[in-house]
Amino acid sequence: MTSTETPSPESRQPVARPGVLDIAPYVGGESKVAGVNRVIRLASNEGALGPSPKAIEAYKALSGEIHRYPDGGSAALRAALAGRFGLEAERIVCSGGSDELITLLTRAYAGPGDEVLYSQHGFLMYPIAAMGVGATPVTAPETNLTTNVDALLAAVTERTKLVFVANPNNPTGTYLSAAEMARLHAGLPSHVVLVIDAAYAEYVGQHDYEPGIELVRRSTNTVMTRTFSKIYALGGMRVGWAYCPDNIADVLNRLRNPFNVNAAGQAAAVAALEDVEFAEASRAHNDKWLPWTSEGLTRLGLKLTPSVGNFVLAQFPETTGHSADAAWDYLKSRGMLTRKMGSYGLPNALRITIGTGDEMKAVVDALSQFLGKS
Ligand SMILES: *Cc1c(COP(=O)(O)O)cnc(C)c1O
Image (cartoon, rainbow, N blue to C red; front, side):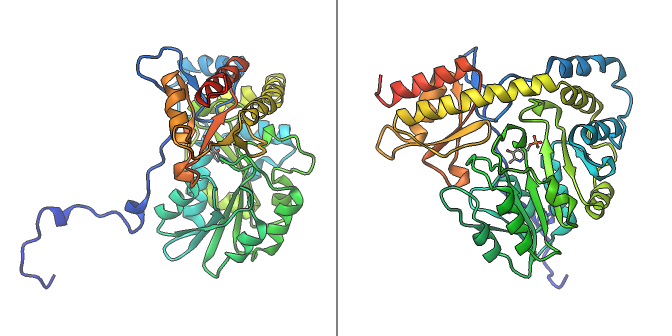
C-alpha cells in the first residue's frame, strides 16, 4: 500500500469477485396471497397433478433414516434413469435440481473473459451462472419467440465456451426440432459445450422433437439436462440429472459436492420414475388442458405462442387497464398467481402454468372478466 491514509472500515469489507454484484438475483414465482386461503399457484410450472403418491410414500419411508448420509453417487437413481431411458448409468450425473448443473457446467467451462451464449428470451439461470464466474452472458435474437439457430451461430466468437438452449424453452414454450438442434451442433466449434436444457421434455409429443440423447451419444461436447421439478412435480426435493459424454461426466463428478442430492430426493425420484402410469396421466392431463387453455385465452383476444410445455405465454394488449401487469394484479387479487415476464424482456406477457381443470377454468373466467368479455 502506498497510501498513508488508514483504510476506512468499509474499504476493508470482503469484495466479491467481478461480476457477482452485477447479478440480478433470481426471483421465483410467488406462492402466497395475503388473506386468501386457497391460492391457485400457476407461477412455477409445477406439475398439475402433484407428485406420484408412490414418491410421497418413498419420501415418508425415509423419515427414520435422516441421520444417514445419502449415497453420494446417486447409484439407485442413475440405474433407474438408465433403465427407463436406455442410457449408460456412468454417463448420468445427478444434481440438486438441474439449476445446479447449469452452475456446475458454467464453472467448469467458463471464466473471466469468456462468453456464455443463449437465446434472447432464454432461461434466466444462464446469465446468472455466467456472471457468477465472471463470464459475459451474450444473447442471440429470436424469431417469433423461437430460438434462431443461425442467430446463435452468428453470435459465436473465439471467447464462446458454452451455448445453453432450453428445449422447449421457458418462458416462450417454443421448441427446436431434432434437425435444427443437430444443425446448431454441427455449426459449433467442437470445443464449445452445447447444453440442451430439456426440463419439459416429458411433455413434448411432437414427432420432430428429440430431447438431446441422440446428440449426446455422438459427440464429446453436448450435455442434456433434465429435472424432476416439472412433470414429476418434485420441485421441493431438488433433483435434476444430466446425460453427458464421458469427458463431461468426469468433469462434473469432480466439481459437484460429494453429497449433492439428498436422500429423500433420491428415493422420491426413483419412485416417481417407476410410477410410469402416473407420469402418463400427468402428460395426458397436459395434452388436454394445454390446448384448452390456449384456445380459451386466444378467444379472449390474447396472443399465445404455440407452447409444447406445461405453461402458456400470453401476450396482453398495451391498452391502459388491459396490460399484463394489470392482469397479474387482477388475478392475484382473486388468489391466482401467474408469472410476470419483464425480467425475460417480455413486459406485455404473463406465463401461466397448466394447473388442474378447475384452476384453468378459473383463470380463463377471471381473464374474461378482466378483459370485459363476460
Ligand atoms: C424449471 C427449469 C429448470 C430448473 O429446474 P430445477 O428445479 O432446478 O431442476 C431448468 N431449466 C428450465 C428451462 C426450467 O424451466
